[in-house]
Length: 229
Image 1 (cartoon, one colour):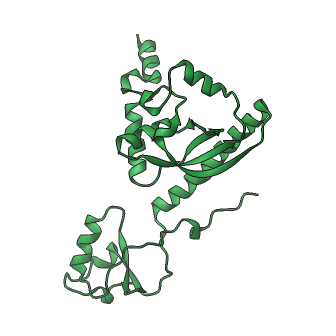
Image 2: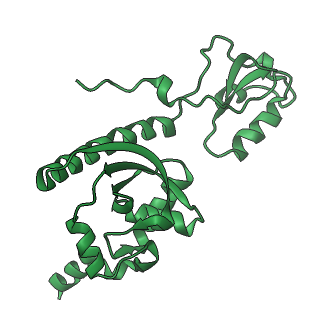
Image 3: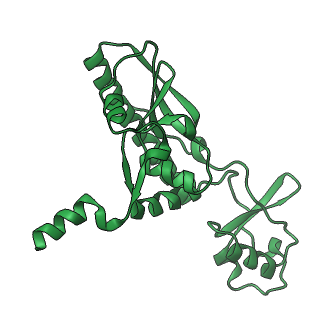
């Protein structure tokens, strides 16, 4: 049975805090201006004294100090909605990688292993010639919030083949990101991958060869338009 993920694996440890002597008004402004936060731990130095949320501030006066409204009975360590979503994303990727590894082992009769790597995008050989502009917006949103699923890459004796994650790679490139996390399937001795041969035939040597097309040229849209005609 697969072990269930623990909160301790995903909670944020480097936490932004406020002081017990900060005013309610100052912290209310900070909550409003800080994306993804609806509260803060209250600490003095490295000692956590409590926690304050937006709801704690509602009935307090603007000049009241935080120690008068904060919750004091707390457990240190924070897990947010983002952390929970990320834990589920990271569980999905191993299933995808495992299926691909089993397929490669059966087709090519080779022994493989998996590694987690941080890979330079410029080194990747794509296996998909086009991505769609509308999907890039969603992938950029995920990247900016730390929700992007890791890429799936095959290291074919030093040649890095992008098996899954073309939209994420192109979204990252547009954001100026040069390297990404990848679940990497490592093949010790070079083999002739079908997806690699197809990429060569299509002239795909680097991610610069991937075409970004607009929504109107998406296969689903084109098919729908033909049916309507």
